[in-house]
Image (cartoon, rainbow, N blue to C red; front, side, top):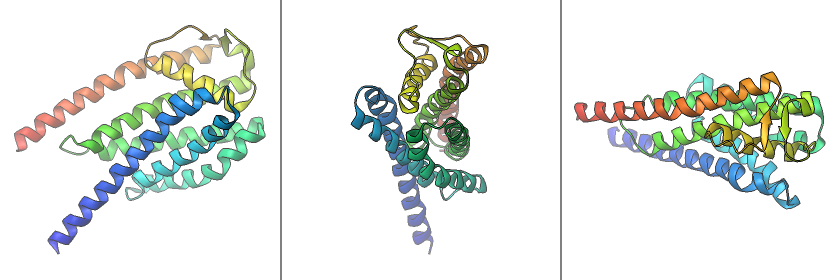
Length: 232
């Protein structure tokens, strides 16, 4: 019985690691491959949209066996999957706005569950590393979604673009993902500049998160390693 229980726990952990790996891979594809291509290739635009469905599914599988909070995340994910293509293709302002707010809530709750269960462990392993990467990518996506929402409601007053402002929702989201990660990583090429006060506040907050999260993460990983050595 003990061996069966330990085997079940091990295989459950392997399953979660695979789900976290899939989550990180799908997010990386959306951010660094299909997102940029969506502005120039029609086929990549469709892949970009449906890749987000896989992100939601991978997130659900990664935390499905956890707390009641995870059940809320799963419920949001199930609601978001059919809304994803419908929202972005219809280009309807309020439908897109509702979708963005739900997706932001999904990513925030998903990140909270991942941080609680990954960094509640006493030893550093692949699960911890994948969880940290996933949460960092979530930060960039959350600010990209909020920036997209701001542009949809404020228009050209939100950000100054060196070229024409995208009005099509999928291409706009792709542009805001690019801006979000240049801000999160403190690169800032200057081709997109926040102008509206709330846009500036979002950019400042994201830059702060981009500095604090790696520092706090590193401190936590070091403390986990020291704790495991002392316990061992």
